[in-house]
Length: 306
Image 1 (spheres, rainbow, N blue to C red):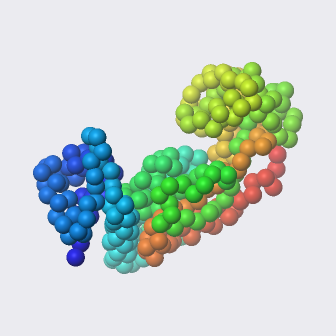
Image 2 (cartoon, rainbow, N blue to C red):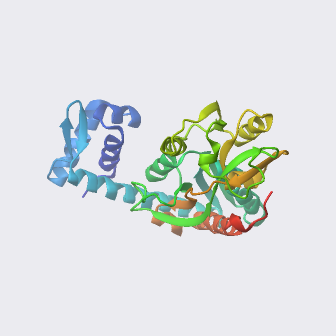
């Protein structure tokens, strides 16, 4: 019989890459972690980690066991959530992690709907980029996530054992002043924007690579990760920007317009959770409301132009 505490130690060793770091994270001593790992490896009957230089690497058996351990912890969290929901007579707490633009569109509408229709269901929200959000869901720091990726990308690593539900897609748009020479076009090609100044977010590798492929280097006038600040700087004339259609659906500052960027993949927004969490009443309630909100925002291309 495998010991749940030993499995927890294994998953933390896998996450941190060393016994010492795992001990710090778990609040154990390093010898205690080593002892738990020895006991687990003896119970399994084969090595689970091997030393590679100063670090550790999971064996094939170790990787398999970590995947099963993640699923086991998910079941335990689901049981805990379900019991809490039953105690609260249909209520409960759902820990939601979400990317930036969903935090100004989907999430506020979600909170408003829950307050009106299901006041017993409470939600806490953490904003995080998809990589961090995925980690929080895997480790149980969050119950449900709103994540995004590009439609031409493969399934992100680590999601194959989890439940992924597609919600909607949106486009990347060029945000500019209404007096910009390109504001009269229905769409804009990136090649038309060489030589312009840009107000951009920190995460812009895809944008920079696309500019390089077109033979120009964009002049970054400002690096800002807040949508309101981006709009204010664009309105001031500092530069143009690329912003998701979802973020712009919440608010566009006076004097600004946005035009879809041609030949750019759509961004997919999806919900991510462990399959067992989909049976927890409070999580089901939140997911149902998110589905309904996303359905109302779907296919923004059919909406009116500025």
